[in-house]
Amino acid sequence: MDDSTVALDSPLARDRLAALTDLVANQGVGLASPEAGEMLKINLHAHTIYSYSGYGYSPSRLAWLALRQGWYALGTVDFDVLDGVEETLTACDICGIRGAAGLETRTWMPDRLDDVFNSPGEPGVMYYVAMGFAGRQPHSTVAATLESLRERAQARNREMVRLVNAYLDPVVVDYTRDVVPLTPCGNATERHILVAYDAAARRHFPAREDLLGFWAERLGLERAAVGAFLGEDPFPHDAIRSKLMKQGGPGYMLPGPGSFPALDEIVDATQACGALPCYAFLDGTNRGEQDMASQLEYLIERGIVALVVIPERNWNVSDAGHAQELVQRLHQALDVAQAMDFPVFIGTEMNKPGQRQIDDLSVPALRAYARQFQQGADMLYAHTALARTGGLGYHSEWARAELPSRAQRARFYGEIGRHMRPADGSIARAASVMQSAGPRAALRALCQ
Image (cartoon, rainbow, N blue to C red):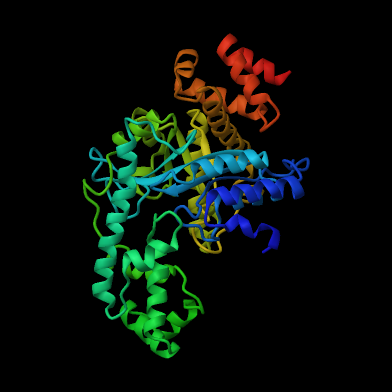
């Protein structure tokens, strides 16, 4: 790590942002532009330290990475909280990066209790993303709903630790003492819990052979298998997570109506904040995703306005036959979204060590959809920037009056976002013309 960037990992956001400001002033090169023919670098789904980052990245460090590598757009999401929104937006402003931010959570679908969507093995449960917040502070009418996401998640975590402690005894952790300090805002996730258990086991069994024996017995694995993934430092191992926390494991809790907010409730809360309700596409194999045209029609009726896609898990698969199936299903979903004027936001999660930091849009599975991905980034950026500048985002009174249909709004914000640049005055100019002369005049003003 470059010594000059160490302060980007400081405990306080204000210190990180101050360090970023100094770095850009002293070393910044401005917004990098891709070479002719080069695929754009877009990540609109990067998790940060406000929930869990596999690289330990704060929003400020992500923005610096994006600046140095010439990313076209950066969007951050964190599980169940808006804590990172303001740092992300400010950091992107400092770096001159197209920026956006939001949260990811799970919702309950009382009218679809028999369907499995994007949460494998959990019918009636849907992973949900809200993007394009103009700030961290939620609208007063829905603050309690959004705060409940954090509270429910932490309550589930505490119950999971209680269950896993009973199974792993004598290796136990104290949630407040061992888990919460691993995250800067107390918003711990399963991966923080895994790190805490790995550390606790090492403390209790300092001899490696004893440590391997413990995990082999509790996980039902061979010592050699445990030794293959258990390195020298505490780590959020997928093998341990699968055996302890997923279905069939001692820490797994079957979700029910009280586990997550109903979809309608969280969509209403998102819209009240002026943000964009999004569906997180998994891979098209579960029943709820096999007919994406019907699924998108259903979601549109419920207020969903965009699709979130993690391309990496839909093409970079070791089994060639399975990879071919996943790519085909991904293409079907993207084609349906394009036909229905349904924006697509792509990104790599970066919530596990070693995950790709940016998608390679030049691979055969993605190359033909690069323009669609850029349109999604443009739409999300334009919505975010205009919501922050003049209250002119996708859900604004202006948008509802001037662009009454969902498709009209998607096309307008996607088009105007393509012509807007951070820090060149185009955002304020667009906002002024939009209010005085309407959407077509705003587009003409930026295209001149």
